[in-house]
Length: 259
Image (cartoon, rainbow, N blue to C red; front, side):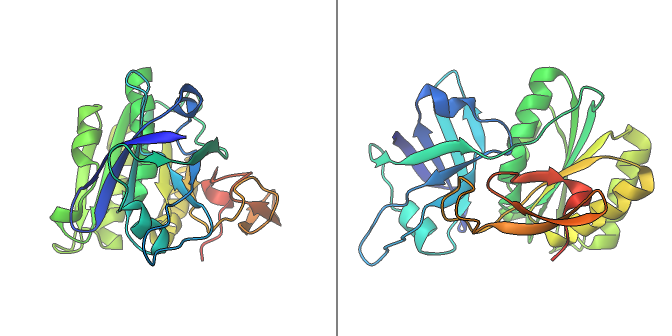
């Protein structure tokens, strides 16, 4: 059980939830998730827990941060949480990102709330002395997320938006190619976006670069018992069905199948 410290709007679509958390929860690895028991509030009666990747871990102050967009009954109910409220949080769960020692120049590419899942990689890169480059995408500048947080952790940030056309696939592809060729990128990371998955798979094959993707999926138990979150992957040349909550949510970039 956690205690709500704050639950404030970042902009008109996203909120940041800060929790006082017990020590075991603070051991979460980048890419792992928590299963959140959303409160019942008026006519908001979410039944299942909601899986959510941790955005930031502050072990010094016993804090967990979640960045979320209000999209349905569960997140709408979460948005009503007030400082001092108790909040039932189960986790950390799943398999997170794994970083090989040779990967010293990391590139993360994500859009919207997907950046929340990748933000803990910036913490690890900063702590271990790795270089991190971030391409942050959004509809318009006011919806760009995590930019200052990435910069505080030493990341070199490139912002692209729909409003000025810089987020279209050819423009992003050129930016990624330039970073690979000029900065010696060792590994690619993304979350959630089908468009970015296909682009990074293409460039990963072309430049022979490894990569990882954190996948979003509806879940029920979060423990791998109910098989609600099964998706198909390609592994060793064969199609296999894997549980996103148990074998993931982070997978090898080239094993994921675009949807």
